[in-house]
Amino acid sequence: MTTVRLTAAQALVRYLACQWSERDGQRQRAVPGIFGIFGHGNVCGLGPALEEEPGRELAFHQPKNEQAMAHAAIGFARASNLLSTLACTASIGPGSTNLLTGAATATVNRVPVLLLPADEFVGRRGDPVMQALEHPREADVSVNDAFRPLSAYFDRITRPEQLVRSLPDAMRVLLDPAETGAVTLSLPQDVQAEAHDFPAAMFERRTWRVSRRPPAAGELNAAVEALRAARRPLVIAGGGVHYSEALPELAELSERLGIPVTETSAGKGALPGGELALGGVGVTGTRAANALAREADLILCVGTRLIDLTTGSSSLFQDPDVRFVGLNVVARDACKLGALPLVADAKLGLRALCEAADWRAPEEWRERALAERRGWERAVADDLQPRDGERMSQGQALRVLNAAAGPRDWLVVASGTPHVDVHKLWNPGRGERCLMEVGFSCMGGEIPAALGVRMARPDAGEIYVAIGDGTYLMGGTGELVTARQEGLKLTLIVFGNGGYQSIHALQRNRTGRSFGLEFRGLDGNYVEVDYASNARSLGCASYSAETEEQLADALDAAREETGTVVIVVRVERQRLLLDSDCWWDVGVPEHSERPETSALAAVHARGRALQRP
Ligand SMILES: Cc1ncc(C[n+]2csc(CCOP(=O)(O)OP(=O)(O)O)c2C)c(N)n1
Ligand SMILES: [Mg+2]
Image (cartoon, rainbow, N blue to C red; front, top):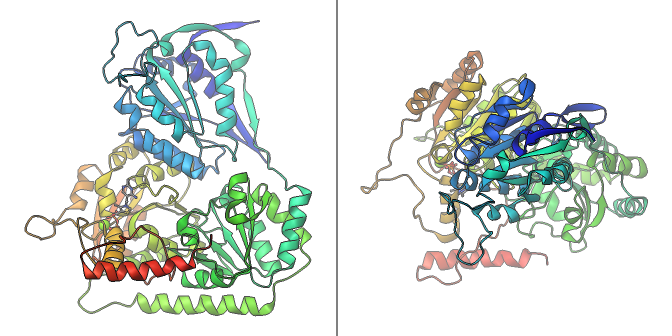
């Protein structure tokens, strides 16, 4: 057998450089690059391996925060429909634990990222190493064991030759849409630098075929029977529709069978236009979608994890005989809500359903959907009217942004009222893709995720990021500097509303109190922050907009800029869009000395009667 002498780190780099993925004849590098912040643990192991790698096929990118690099890899993977992702290397201790939130975000959302946290010496000669945990009873535990519950796959490489088996396993999980998430290889610092004679065959180009799982005949028949028996069918489309590139099949199913379509946050834009597109569903959805969900007798859930935001904590579906069909590559998602499972790729599953169902939903149901949709559109238009003495609202600003968005533009959102408002009112037909991360809804994920989208889609138009002031302050802004280093452009719209207003609204609606959520000083006054100057100091162009006209002008000007632009919009602080008419359980106190809290808790408790077991 021909062998090549390499350190574990060199072998890892060389292996990743020759992995490819392929689906429907489209091939791409599976891991074309790596983010890294060096410290002890990786600076002399993976560092030189990356620098020396012949041809530098594994492009190196330097972020400013480890959590951010995981978010960037997630954005990259999502914009690549999970067929390609990036690796992330971090130093021992805090560098690696900073990756934990990123690991959770990836695994929760079933999105591939390859995490390479550095770990303590296996040899232990100079222990304890700086930043070591020194667990009192379990000597082999390090902080990296915290990755185990957060990873779709975890391995600690304690000898270089383990890579021969571990790397193919890691790649398999990374590229399997049913299993994927954070794939973590914990790399002790001595092992990274240890040499071994690796089989040369390991470094030959390998293409991983990402196959589309076809529906099994029995499951398909059962699903078709359920559809045929339905009078009021409805689709809930999730992120899986995008990843599977099943938009044409969903549109065809909806049109041919006359089934209205609603969308989760990850599924936003799954049916970007047409009469039967009812928009977001659930707690942050449209009243039109929720009205139909309450009445539907058959819900076809496609590529969705059905989190509480989508189901109104299991309160949304009120037909006593409602049935569910779960079309999903992940069996445990397909079975949720007691659904008839249709474990399959969304594209193949929808196509098969469409072909097999010689049937159409009653015309009254379509009429009902159209009426609800028109009613919602009128209600939103009324709600967005300017109000005397008030600043521009965030909803009004997002409508301006939506009108400015073109077919090649992307929008990235994750948390706060930007998520809520975009899910409710963004018309996805005007942009290429609206990318929402709400599975983990991680504040601070937005800017790095957008960076990852830009890396995956360098030819896209504008990559907009809609972000609250709290989120801007929390994290990710360091990646504006990374964007400059990489020559990549983002366009941020920062909404200044003086606090964590989404949660503040939730607090006021459920407890009648206001506590700890606004940016106020000891004197009670709002603390003003000059976000525009902050962005300029990081090297971005910045604009401020107080009116719809100013915002439209700023968006025009931003399009002409070559570098990153930050547009700061001061909005009416506590003005929300109209609510979605969907209950949500948030753990309201069963006892309080405050009468307003008790009264609201009693109202909230009534919602429990709506929850389906
Ligand atoms: C990392 C993280 N911490 C806390 C939360 C809980 N949370 C969700 S939205 C939000 C407030 C966001 O504030 P901001 O970005 O200003 O948006 P706004 O709500 O004001 O629109 C908080 C604290 C979260 N989702 N993620
Ligand atoms: Mg805010």
